[in-house]
Structure formats: C-alpha cells, structure tokens
Length: 147
Image 1 (cartoon, rainbow, N blue to C red):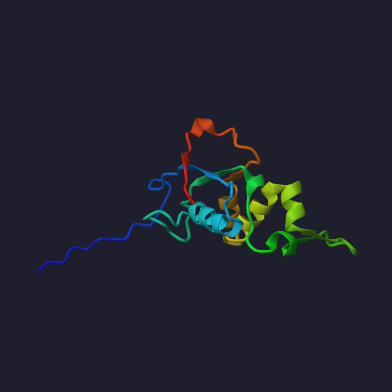
Image 2: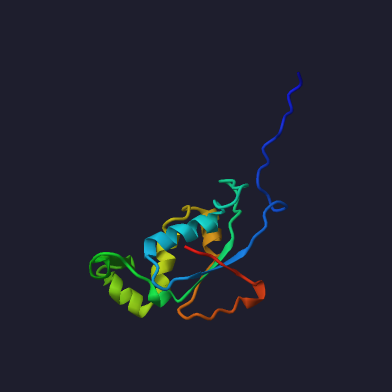
C-alpha cells in the first residue's frame, strides 16, 4: 500500500490574498473588538496562517468615538505616558482620552495584542482608525466585518 505524502505549505506572498474589512465601533466593547481586530491583522482567521509570516488583512475602524468600556473602566482605567524626563509622567483617565483622542484608545489596545517585533509593527500599519463614519478607502471596496 502506497502512502500519499502531502507537504504542508507555508504562507508566502504568492499565496496570501489581502482583503479590506470595515468595523463599526458603535456600542462595541473596546477589548473584545480589539482582540478580534488583532486576530484579523495577524491573519489567524485564514486557513494558511503562518506565525512567521504576515498574512493578515487590512482593517478600517469607523465611529471610534462611540466605543464602550464595561463596568467602571471609563473612570478607573488609566493610560500612562512617560517622556523620560524628570516629572515627565502623565496619567490620563480613559474617559478623558476617549473624549480627546478616541482613535488612540483603539490603537493602543490593538497594538498591545500584536507581536512586539518588526512584524508586529508591519501588522499595525494595516490598521486605520477614524472618528466618523466616513473613510478614504472606498476604492479598496472593503467588506463589513461583524464583531
């Protein structure tokens, strides 16, 4: 009896087909939405996912100002920045950050879920976050992604 041998094919540029997805952040929980977006940016939703190759898709997030945090996180959660100068530490609540720069809250949440190397930085460049419902990527004919 002969055995058929099938080789597992690793993802490469000829196999990977990148798509564009649109996510509406209206009334979406920040963490749950961010983990789903990070998974799509990595390419884990595809059958040919390979950990050492960027096979993820592009993601557009609209209505970022309408994001929701559960429990008391809107008042209790703090975002810290540090300029490396003495006295250069700044602490801001999630409520103030989302009111001032709602895109930053989503970007920081997704970036923290991606790999911490040059491939993770390349994946992060495929994320586009907008405050309003309009975006300049209509030419790519993005598909709506349900969270």
